[in-house]
Each structure stands twice: as structure tokens, then as C-alpha cells.
Length: 254
Image (cartoon, rainbow, N blue to C red; front, side, top):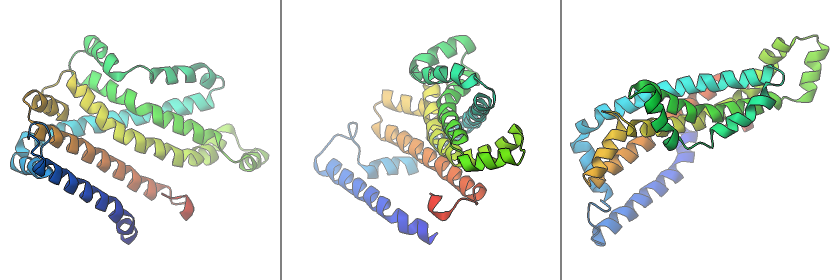
């Protein structure tokens, strides 16, 4: 906890300074509230009318967590299959990269046409956003095993499955968690994008309604909620990482 406080006070100080500058600029420059409300106005609205977006926050959180879990599992499974099956990576890896060149905002309407306005197209969007960083990170971890360790396992008569479970997969855990942390922040963004396409609740819906009614303060509330959820997801993955990867040397920990 002391180390966390020692490392965290500087970013917190910068954040406080940013809000102070923002507050002073909004107040003394006489900027209209509909254009750029002061932070005090935004926080007052958030605490006063929290019931307007509380259920939307829970809905987005549930959607993001569901899509993130599914996307993470699919990302790890794809990475394992591409690694253990000979020739699979050379065939399918270019298509994985190609899948990330298709803008989600363009693909999303097609998913709605194909699967309707239910939860399935939303989960697919979040999965598409989340799985790629995990797959790439896992593949890098699988192939970056020290050669001397691989030679020792082969000389010991270890099977391919034993090499994978005892050496390659444990070696890939740090990169996998790096991919999980990236995808954790992407999952919230994917959930909000999916809610824009056709939903009756969620932070994406709250943001759209607030923007159309020129309630800029509520738009900023939605933005802050998205940032907060992404940060919480990231911290949770960091805590899980530190509880699982205890064999890493201290200099290798983050």
C-alpha cells in the first residue's frame, strides 16, 4: 500500500491540477455550460441525479464483463490452437490481423441485421475488440521460451504436451496478462459502441440521449464512468496477475 501511494501521488496531483485549470477556465472565461461545463457542475449533477445513470452503469458493466470473459477465453484458445497445430499460424494469422482492420462501427450494423437487437451482436462486438490483443500476446509468449530450457526439456524426454504445460504456457503468462489488461480497457469501449446500435439501457444510451438534448454535463458524466470502469477492470487484472504470477523476480513485476 505504501508503494502504491508513493507511486500514485504524482499522477493524482497532475489530475487535480488539470481539474483546477478546467474549473478556472470554465468559470472565468464565461464559457456556456452547454459547451464546456465546469467540473463542479458535472460532479454536482452526478451526485444529485445519480439515479438517472446508475442502472445504465450496471447494464454496461454486466455487458462488458460478459463480453470480456468470452473474448479472453476465445483469444487464449485461438492462440493455443495456432501454436500447437503445425501450419495453423501461417494460414490463419494474416486473417487475424485482417479482422482488426475492419472498423467495428462499420461491422456493427451488419451484426444487428444478422442477429437482431438482442445481446448476441453486442457480445460479438466486445469479443472482436478483446480477443486480438490476448491472442497476439499469448503467441509471443509461447515462442519466446529460452532455448536452453527447451533443450533441457527435450533431453529429459518430455513430450510436446509436457513442454507446453510446464514451460511454454507458464512462460506466456506475463504476456497474456499484458493482453488481458489491454483488452480489459477495450471491453468497456466495445460495450458502449454496441449500445449505440440499438439498446434501451446502458452508458452508451445515456450518452446518446444526453448529447441529443445538449446536456453536456451528463455527457461528461458518461465519459467519466467509462474511464472509471476501464480503470477498475485494469486494476482487477493487475491484482489477479500478482496473485497468480508469484514466481516472477521483483524486477520483472509491474
